[in-house]
Length: 378
Image (cartoon, rainbow, N blue to C red; front, side, top):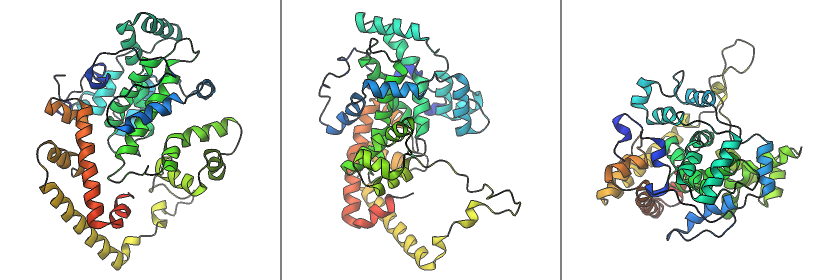
């Protein structure tokens, strides 16, 4: 990999869709046990979630049109939600925005017909044809962008989600069974989503939200359960979802609030009457309370002091991650760090994870429950 994103160009998407930059290799058939991949037990969680997809699950996903082709027009719509009127591939925008450049590159890879997809998948499975496998991956890169975009409110850096989703896509292609009767986009959607959700879960602010078994269950299954109930003609109330997933309704509401809340403009008018009032006018300003304002300012100063102290004990790559991923207003991507250091994105992630674990432990030891309250909310 010779180009750095922050030099103004996004590298060829196809060049970074295989884990660790290695060759695309055929994995065990879907349903077979996953081989051990390292000493991080959490790495097995995303594959486990995708492996649980049954034939009925996949059929339901296709019936819901979840795997409809992601057209150029849809990519343009996604780009406009992120960048305003500019379309992906716009030269001026791409020079300063790696994500826009990446989306422009993704459009170069054509969608496959169902027949062509099946032909390539058979070549890949039966003959180990890596060129066929590569085409299966690149033709679905735009699907990764679409799914990552769904979670843009859950994680600040969308390009990180795209890169993690690409790993899930590769795993899906490695394990895809063309004789199972479903489209690759349907099957890979499970893997892409599982890897993205796992990444968010492991990197949600400094204090994870998925600290209990029920939270993890909701994080991975809330959306699927809601859609299953809708498909069955059942109102997906928090109480009904809680019953299906064996959790409390309160936990469902909390997870929905964090992950599934739709965008609502605070500047939108309240009604047809032209009285100028917006939703923002109705929000109580807790910060207006002088006591709250003083408390918040004092805690912010204390937190900043502790962060500076923690950073003073770091050096090398951990210090670089701390400055450019934790403290920066505009954090760079793990891929950028990997390119800078000459290591894989996964290695950069491991270094970051080790540093963040130490940071969480340090802050919780210094500030106790207060830091969980402060870091657990926007």
